[in-house]
Length: 208
Image 1 (tube, rainbow, N blue to C red):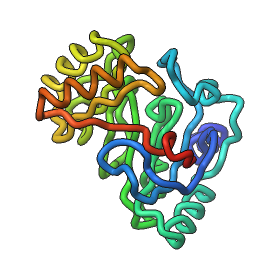
Image 2: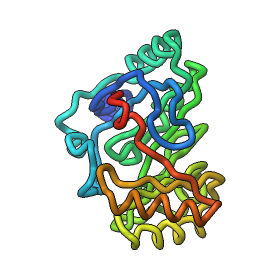
Image 3: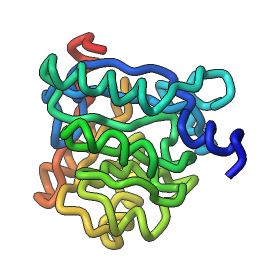
Image 4: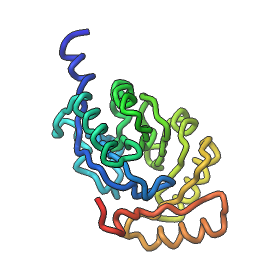
């Protein structure tokens, strides 16, 4: 392997890292270290992290540095590490998860599922998008299916995904500040017991 390729594997474009609480899904309220990777071609209009889309504007950080930060977060109470983005599967996550495994922390992935699966994770949250549906492999691998709801069509899409996914946890999450999505999601969960409501509690509480 040439030196340039080796260096690329040992570093990743990182938008930010921070130790906070997981705000969404089944692990909501738990202490976690977040590693947000740069790069996303999915392009959701409602995305709240659009600065993460271009990968090349974010500094590349070494795996050694990220592992050291995870160890420090664990010492300060982090229960797991969340790899998010952007769209993290636009990178080969194998070297990163192999390195982070040495910390002893469970590893979680948040993805839209459009890229090839890579890395080894204890929990995968799949948030599929109608305009860029996920791969069958991502649907089969996820533990948590989380569909964002803005309109009635999103409910039909959620059921289509659920019929294909092998996910034990099914979540509907209203789009942020979307009154229609909130009303639809609440009503649907009330009438369909297989589904649960997910809220962005960190935004309600003003927690990063």
